[in-house]
Length: 199
Length: 101
Image 1: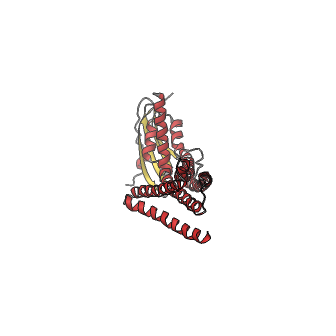
Image 2: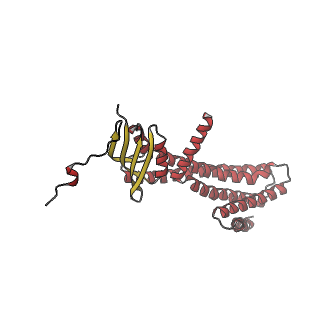
Image 3: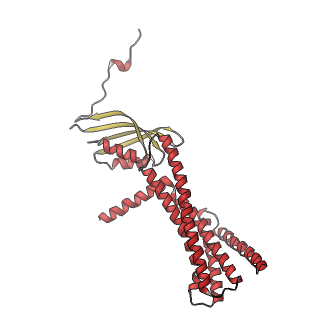
């Protein structure tokens, strides 16, 4: 019973922090933006590796994983620094208006909560998206099938992300999905053009 | 020790947490029977609220802690009633002022 009460109090506290800092809205934005980055970057690696005639799955997987880790760290670090700076400025402005220090109040704690959630989402979303796309290189498939399934997975992820954004904006999910897939197609077309000239 | 039964506070607070949340938190305090929060001035980032608390045994320090934690500042304690009875404010000649005939 005490445990349930504690969990309820914790949820209440989190939703209060969320209402003060609007961290859910920022989290959604960061998630979509960075998952998109993760998918497109990995798609680029796939096209590059294929055009470069890389036939060893572990090379593609390691390259993809390296990029995923870098995107994750960059996302986390960038969001932490940006959000921290923004939140500190907001708190300072509020302190000027209330004529008191707001350190160690619910408002500053809500700000810290928003900084950490945004950073974690910003770090995890590109990493997870990239890992999802290169996952087929882990499966017992032929190299051609690995490339094909990874590309299909990338476009499916883009479509899912677009549909999610479409539902979020209460507009057409199909249109949202098509827009994201189009970004993937454009990115692939530019890659093929550039790689075709370079190879 | 006399029990404080009514406190009226003039508070400056940020818009968030809202007065709904603040009222809810104040009512969970021991000794608080009911709360009224009225906004009487609204600014871009802050608002002025008149907080009236009534109960059997109000704990001012606890009330202050909740208001401060929500980012509020108590500008003044405008009214207090304490004791076994609720005493109405007595009318005195000063209240009506000198009248010219």
